[in-house]
Image (cartoon, rainbow, N blue to C red; front, side, top):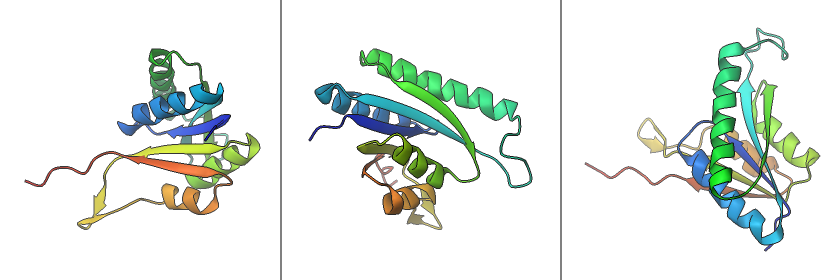
Length: 144
């Protein structure tokens, strides 16, 4: 299967690097393009275009890390920073606007009240994405 456009949302988690690496490997086969985005969630009490300097600095570091990972894979990526209320709709909208063939999302193994949890963003993207979605989950921690 060939993917000419791949979207990789990054959050600063350990799984980001693996998601970017996978994107590079898949895109290389078809000389495809990789778009890496980071979403800053803006509180409802603030305007969407509010200056969020600490969050912006963190986001720039995260995107720089993605660029370094892609550079190590000898691949070039485009990065973008989005400010929005909710990450899921922003990712789906970005995928539609860029007409991507694949979204690759990394995630850590999380539990809540002793049960495995996907959070809010991943189920939203799985339900609404206009393309294929790959979830790259980190391994479950070993039981004590």
